Length: 141
Length: 141
Length: 141
Length: 141
Image (cartoon, rainbow over all chains, first blue to last red; front, side, top):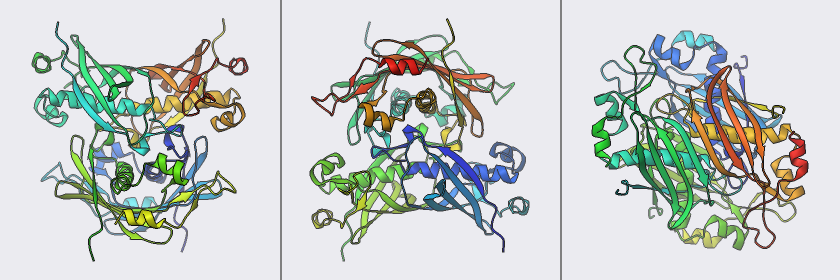
């Protein structure tokens, strides 16, 4: 079995990303993992979220669940890399793995469970998970 | 001439609002002034932004310009008050004044220039400032 | 066995807390849970972080791990409540449970694993978990 | 008179930087200008903030005042450039100019008034502006 495709999203930690302890305030890791998820799909060849909405009615890939472990702190001025892959495709959800590194050092790692959703025609204010389109799964191999 | 109507928006500073110097990271003052602007209009009796969009086509009151002076720092665990008024109504823009205090102490103060905007029917992806509706001005006296 | 002590931290969702889907950007839930953790210890009678540092050398209670499930979205203008307790005290770590509600509706829930840390005298730039002081456990019963 | 030295700080707008209108939430421009200010001084050859603190007792370059004009919106996935210079050195303050562009398009521009500060020995919990060191002015020519 081959390794899943992995993309790398580069982050430069800003002063304002850090807390009074002088280290990255942890919710920023979630923000960067979210940006790395979007970047992953763009790297795989998926159109932008804005285009997906127009052409396929896909309203996004919202989160159902996150789990994150914090190993080592980082601070401003440092460059980090978020290594992102999809480790499991289920029928209606998929699981991202994100590993945040500073070069070779592991800083934090986590998983996200996400779904592709649409606005159901009977009530466009709601969102509903759809079966993940096969062509999207194929793009990301 | 009477004093303009002033509303007070209460903020409790969170750990994550503060920077490595241990004090509020300054863009958070802008975030709180923005929240205080929305609160001002709700206190004046204006419907929510969501309702304004549906019933009157108003897409929001975006910022054209801000100016802020920082006087004293604040830190987490403290309660601040944003005192907000409209100090000038022009034809297409209005000027907010926000004064952030910790009880009697002045922490920071600023102005915002904002406009009421709609999506023009000829291109709904754009926004366009409208003459400020008289009934809205009247509500805020 | 009795229910663990639970504190409630009130949040008013700001416009700037929401994303282009119009709902709370998920890392903000982590920020609010973090604020609710600090609030929990203050409600239990623990001094502020600033004082803990001075009087006991405790540098904070950083996160080792988080897990969060997102159930229902929320938007700006809404008031949410973060219900926070400690569901397990181990020797060197403790586990917070946070349940975010909008009145009776469950929006999101999660756990955090945290430790009490000090700067070890041999290298004050590092942090090291300590056995959780018994008097702190006692305060939080 | 020659043009002042200008540095460019590159930003990729994240989904979480945008608000329910789908555009960059304006306080993020302040955050990026702040990061671009630090980058400016690093590009000029000044040590990091962490090192300045240790070697020269300089506690930072906090803001006294900001002024920003918003011209055009930006959205996630876009790459922006913050062009930063110092347009005036006074005795105890200096004035940054930041121009945020998306390629050739002007998105927003502003000024910041900042000071170099130290913790006065008589009360290390305070900060005090110092005369801007001549060698720092010289570095930034």
